[in-house]
Amino acid sequence: MSYLVGVLVILAGLLVSIALHEVGHMVPAKRFGVRVSQYMVGFGPTLWSRTRGETEYGLKAIPLGGYVRLVGMYPPGDPRAERKTGRIAELVQSARDASAEEIVPGEEHRAFYNLSAPKKLVVMLGGPFMNLVIAAVLFTVVVVGFGAFGPTTTLASVSQCVLPVGAPADAECTEGSELAPAAAAGLLPGDTIVEFGGVATTGWDELAAQISAAGGTPTEVVVERDGQRVESVVTPVVADRPTTDASGAAVLDSDGEPVTRSVGFLGISPTQGLEPQPVTVVPGMLWDRLVQTAQVIVTLPERMVDITQVAFGLEERDPTSVVGPVGVGRFAGEIASVQIDGYDTALRTADLIMMVAGLNIALFAFNLIPLLPLDGGHVVGALYEGARRQVARVRGRPRPAPADTARMMPLAYGVFVVMAAMGALIAYVDVVRPVQLM
Image (cartoon, rainbow, N blue to C red; front, side):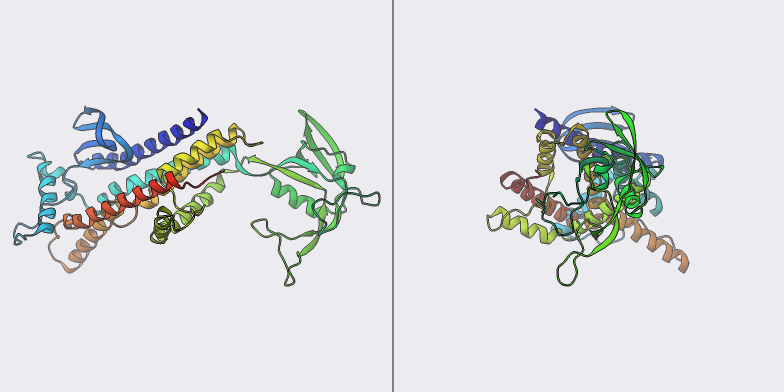
C-alpha cells in the first residue's frame, strides 16, 4: 500500500507541474489577446473536458505532457512565393492551413503570429519559468520546513577516550587512555547541544568549528536531554585530527597518509537527519540542480547508447544512468515503502517533495532545448524574428513578416519521433533492468 502511495504522490506532482506549466503559457497569451482554444493536461483520448468562455479545459488519458492550443501559431506564408511541391512542402503547408482554420473570421489580430517578438518570448518562456518557480518553492519548503539531510547537533555517540589518529575502527580504550572531554563532562548519546560557549548552536558545521577553536579552553555547554536543559563545562583537548575536504573525505599526503592538524577535540559524533536551513541556501541548491540537469541533457546521446546496450543485454545498468517516468515512479514507491532504521515519515516526505522539485527542474531545462516542438524551438523562432525586425529598423526597411516557423515542422515531427523512441526505450529498461534506489 505504501508503495502505491509513493507512486500516486509522484504522479499527482507530475500532473500538477504539467498543469501549471501550461498555465504559464496560457495566462500571458490571454493577457496579450491571443485566443486560447484548448488547455489540456495529458495526451491521447480525452477523459474529461469543460468549455469556459472560449477555452476548452480538459484532462487526457496519458499524463506525460500537456498543451495549450494558441490560435494562429503559424503565419500563412508569403502568398507571392511559388507554391512548392513534395512531401515536406505538403507537411509545411498543412501546418499553415490548420493554423489558419482555427482563426475566427474578424479575429485575425488575435493570432499568435501577430504578437511582437518580446511578447512571444514571454508566452513561450512562461511554461518553463513556472516549473522553475515550482522547484524553488518546493526546495524552500523542504530546506526551511523539513531541513537538509546531514549531521545534526544531536549526539549519536560519545567517545570514552581520545584515540590516536590512524587507530583501527574497533580500537578500544585502555586504562591508560586519556578520557574524552565529552564523557568527562557527562554528555550522553541522544543529547542535543543547544548552546556552546554561550552561543546558540545553529548546525553541526558551526558547532564543529567552535569546538575546534576552543582547544584547551573550559567552555560552557548546554544540552537538551529528555526535554530538560542540562548545563555542563567541557574542555576540548588539543589533538591531531584528520583534515577533510569539502565532501568530507580525508585529505591524504604524497605517501597516502592522512593529513592532520591540531584542533580542539570533544569526542562526539552527530546523528544524521533533517536539519532546518536558512532560505538563503535555496538559490545555490537550485543552481546546482540546474547544472546537473544540463550536464545530463548535454550527455544524453552518450547515455542513450548505454541504455541501448543495457536493453540488449550487452551491459549492466549503471546506477547513475538516466531514468524515465517509470523509473521515477519506482523510486517514489521504494521511498514510501522501504523500512530502514531512522528513515522516518519526515525523511520520506522530504525526499518525495525533492523528487517532484527535481522533475520540475528537468521540465524547465528540457523544454529550453532549442528544437521544435519544445518551447525552446519557439523561443529561437521569436529571437530570429526579433533580430530580423531590428536589422530592418536600423536599415530603414519595411517591417518583415512574422517568421515562418511552419517551415520547421518536418524537424519538429522528427524530434517528436526521436523523443518518443527514447522514452519508450528508457521505459522498457526501467521495467526489465531498473535502477535500485535502496
